Length: 439
Image 1: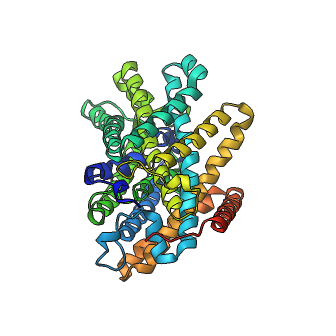
Image 2: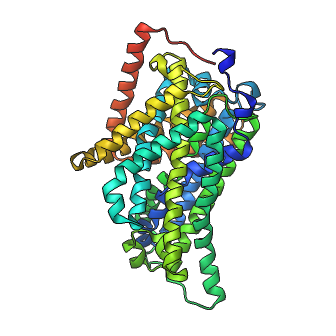
Image 3: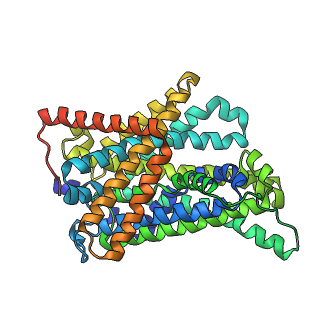
């Protein structure tokens, strides 16, 4: 890359921005809806959070070790090169491409879904507006966050810190309300009387594990994290552990504030729980915070897709336009192309006939992202020594395998087809442009 286009020190993500990228990418709109599905499972739900949270943290730890470079001492010089470079170093170019291809395609689709989620969340505040302008609001979100990313990586980092701080407000409040009710000697709702069992626990784990994805967005930036050998592992491990504990506490708190039936029937369980104690105005404010939460998740996804397309463009695995950058090393062309793809999906979803297809595509993209988890954990396993560390990585692999199983046979089969399409794209481009490995 030309020296003038290399990232400048003033455009790097610092430790707090990197942490916000992890936490903000994990906390989207999904966690605010999950209590509806978890309420009928009783105490199986908190245990499900423990299992899935442990698996997600194991994966985050694996990615953190992988980002430090080869060997227990790490390789600070190469720690910020992006996830494709890390997997490439351990498993080779083919495995690295498949993992990055799955990550990229999955995030392009999920960005469209998250943008739609922002608009859908606002239906509780203004159903008429959302029905008429929801799709265009989603498009506006994609355009706006793409513009922020093009302005600079640190601009995206600042937005991420702000939106993360806002999205934590309803979570902190819902955790405090049961304690407040206990102090006021007010009764709490009983947890659903469902006995602990393998079936309920498996369902709870399957429901919760997808809410704990997103930390991988922090490993997408190529040479844009300050002191990555230190900051990236700390953000991955600390952020994933924080979110896992937060999710379990918040989800349990909602179950103590609303009855199981009330939780299952609520359009927005968190808003309903808060409104039940503090009034409708507080509930409306909660809905606004949830919309901002989804928007912050979208901000991290937009940044990740731009970097992933850029990484593959550098290697000739996507058209050369993806590798073009502006001053400061910002992959502006990749960001714009990815935004166009996501916007096309949003507009396609506006047609009711394509809604089912879009839902399936989202599930398929989730399976594709899981390929990244498996490849990243295997790469970390290959370059890690020590029984304890390898046991942690194996725990992450088991978590990823369970997630693939939970996605279903049909989605897994089409996920394999998506990988084959990626190989065909790579082969076609390689015939015109020699594929090079960027270490």
